[in-house]
Length: 179
Ligand code: IMP
Ligand code: MG
Image (cartoon, rainbow, N blue to C red; front, side):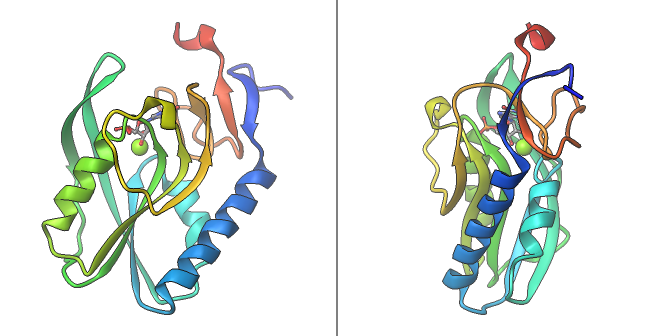
């Protein structure tokens, strides 16, 4: 049953579940019943966001965005590319950005800046995974799930060339696949 692409499981289904619940509890406590607009960053965050919103207890609305930072090779440049924008006016709203993983920090730093210009009441970030060793641009992350080492991971929404998003766990991709 071993997946031929996966070196090892890094975050199990059980650990993901516990982390989602911990983050949701913290979010529920902090917003104290206030309405929340959840901004799901496609495609990587879809599974995490779907599990997280089920545990939120305030009135929630959901919108989607596709954004990435331009990359040359493995380095992200700091310019953001909005492939699909929100369909909602966020001014005056509590906005929570849901991200799968923060790597260099470039995408989220730029995205937070861009959305802040639209005058939300509050804007915060929630990420499932974080690779702190890779940070180039500092970014304030209010809700952070699990810090992981500098390895390429897939599953639970995260892809390698668009495959492996459907794995129920987060696994380390075999080096021979991308080297
Ligand atoms: P950055 O923080 O601007 O460098 O980019 C973060 C984005 O890069 C994430 O939203 C992912 O789409 C992608 N990414 C970074 N590390 C990984 C990984 O280990 N696996 C899959 N995607 C990753
Ligand atoms: Mg992403």
